[in-house]
Length: 338
Image (cartoon, rainbow, N blue to C red):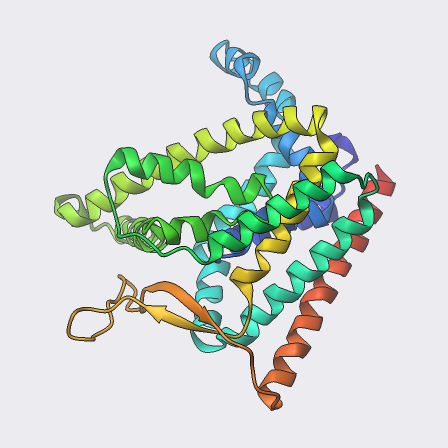
């Protein structure tokens, strides 16, 4: 499989990882949708499934090359490289765009979700009462989640581990936003903003030869939280992939229908016309995260007036649809070449 990958394929795979990483960080958007529409979702799930007892046995016995080939190492490595780069670069740009051009960013994502629904529905052929029921249930769950009230922050390490398991759901289950779930359970800022910034700051301190941060209890606690969160994420990724691999193999039609339902339900989260509700103190002042940004707790949605801004937003929705269709064309080309 790996020998057929050209240099451009490898570059595009890293870019897809960038896309998945950025999408996973945005509440309401699922990185799994990027994998699904780009045509590598099943390879992603089945590659993760290979991280099993046999893989660990190869690793323990020092058969690193066999382990690398067995788990489709080049594919997963390039994809995760893109995701890691995204968390420290693209996602920060995305934070800036959401802060300053919120309506248009959400419009693009809304268009991408619509395009994804169109693409997956077009490819899906097994329509019957079971799959229709699965779509309805998936849609109701997705919409219901978008209206839940968020909880408060909790840095208990067992809870953080559980958050790690939940956070990767967006990578393995298209339409199910792990970052939005983190927002609902109160740990989005702690795990995807503060702890990531703590790691970034620590790297910069080490490069400058400054190790004073090891005496900073707050920094050390955030790094500890990030390590546990990462461990939970890896556990969730492997666990979900084995579960989904089994489900896709034995109940593919119902699974695909449920995914379509989840994606339809996620439209409620990414609806562009919404007012952001920020976390405030009792005196009405905004609570800021470690970057100085206001902390989002939820959204209130509304129907827009028809004006120039709305027309621009509609244009960005069309752009989002076009992006997905372009990814679809590339995915089809890639599958034909294989």
